[in-house]
Length: 194
Image (cartoon, rainbow, N blue to C red; front, side, top):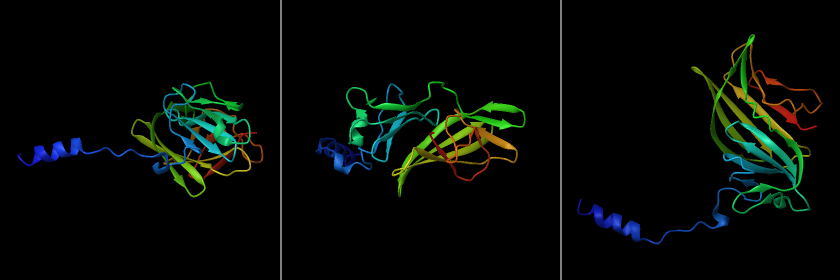
């Protein structure tokens, strides 16, 4: 007890280390982990030089895709008291629809839990858990950093035979233009914005 107080006092009085922008574990010109356009739990990710995705982390889906003005991709965000998207809107989902688990003829809402975002070689990867009763599904989404078109890759794990996980919006297509409204197995699905 006698030794604990001096150690606590020394720790409290020690100079605090300030983290410089260069020491952050992510590139702020590629990913912005602050709320965006009033969506409190959101992330903005830049794909290529000028395309930005705004993700609603509570809904597990992009709510906005836009092209930054000018030549610099980081000009797609206006930072201040709140972070705002700047540029030409290419996609915006204002529906607030959520993912649904379809089992035969019935659809079930899912509780969503955001598990995190990591940076891999050439992509950012999000992970979410969906729950319905005792059922647990894991959704993974990769956003390639350098892509020749607006693209995202999705995979769901834990599906039973005959089940599908319905996407919140049908705006996304396969690269050959086919509509996709649900994921049905654990393979990676590549979706593009037409």
